[in-house]
Length: 493
Image (cartoon, rainbow, N blue to C red; front, top):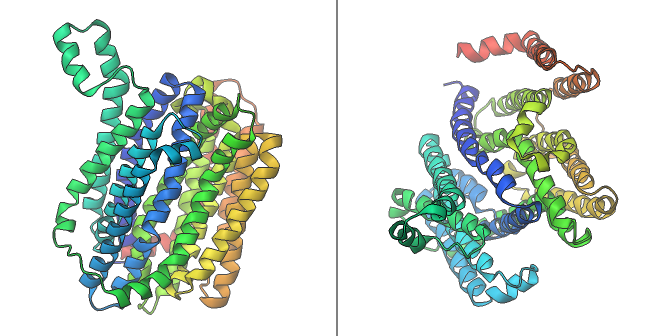
């Protein structure tokens, strides 16, 4: 099969499950932004920001390391057992210490009265870290359907329990008979904060996920090859730094807002900004789906004669797809923004900035193959750390002046800088002849069309919709004319 067609097919499977799952998950956005205050929603997002950082630490680059060493080592089972043994050990140690020192951790993150948040998330993190390697195994074995199905179930359980705890239980308790109330009160305590039930739902979903990965865990043996582990750690530790810097770029702004903005508005700003991120994250859904399929693909295709040509074509298609998604979301932003509650829509101005940031981040992920395939992961870490430094500096400078808008621009600056640096370093160590002119043209065209749509003021909703559709068709037609020969080659194989 045409390797790019195979990659595209797997991306579609990963993407379809992610999109359907996110559609279910997005049911929670209007729910949260209507049930919770801006401050309460801010608390939920702050906790998940901490979790994003902790998850990177607990997996310490071992997913990518598994892909790499599965290709270059003869004993794939030994690689799998060693990596999972390592992750299992560190996760259990982490869980033990967090539970013991839960109150101290809660004070440290400034939620001294909510140590239960810390304990719940420690369990969630441990389960998710252990699940990460079986998921990587499914990706390496080209089993996107099972991978996607389990992810879909995870999100379904999470959403279903959120609806149960946040809507159905409180509703039923209002007029329930004593017998019905007694049943509900077995698993639902109305005196607890509803925020706790958001986290309990996540915990249940993570536990179900681990159970569904039973067949991938069944053959696991606690077999630790220390010599192999040391080699893999040399490769993976820079990836840990890369991941930490990346998640800092993603979440640092929200964490920083909590501590440098006035306390009476900090969590409200975080809530508004987080709701806008949910919109922009629709583009990142595609980026994530692509990464699920592309990372094992890049490693497995490395030995092919035409590998660099294929990598360049993949980048071309990726930029077309992400530019199209950026354009589509922005042209119909008045419809898309209805996902979030009215009180949170004042942050809509940050959405185009965040979307461009995610687009640049996706290009950076594509470019990152040069340091992963050449085993120069330390350079990837240095690039990401440089990006994190930019994030810290410009968030400190801009958040006090511009609030969450400053954080969005800092993210765009960070991702754009990482993209450019990675490209120029990659051209030194692993030359791939990307079609730079085309890539710039597609991104620029999408930005220009968004600006045209923004500055042409039309009151009539129907004509506004028609204008947006016309501009989208211009982009599609331009791509077709430019790429029609390549598309014919793509679909004929």
